[in-house]
Image (tube, rainbow, N blue to C red; front, side):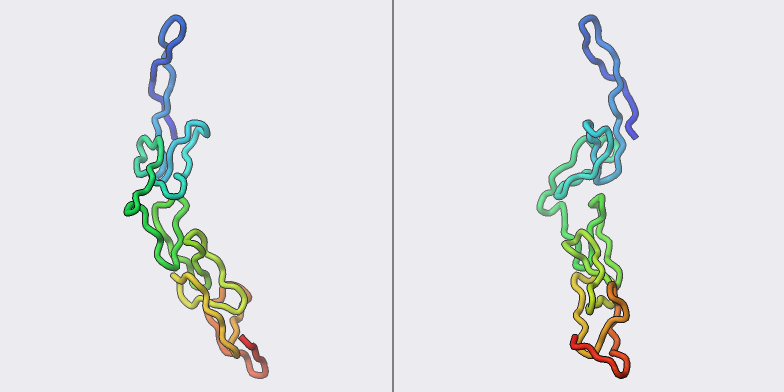
Length: 141
């Protein structure tokens, strides 16, 4: 990661050469001098400079966009990814398994569908369908 290039530091007698970091962080990160490493930009900020990312810039209203329904933002805030079938997008930040008696038949949903009466998913969480109850069994929905 950081490499060194010389800079001058004053002392009482002369200027000494000490290393200064030459940065290299991933997109969406900046070099935190206190931590001594690359860290993810805070929410609402970005950094596309991978060569010398010293800080993140605040997003302009048109620079950062909300992920579409059923998608979550990546950890480095550079892209959106869609939730799988059986899961829904919660606040565009995490994919959550559909709870009991609900299902998501396709990827890319932001809410699960309630199973109607007489139908039940075959699994307690992350159901992708809600088939009819077996003969002799029922559910009120």
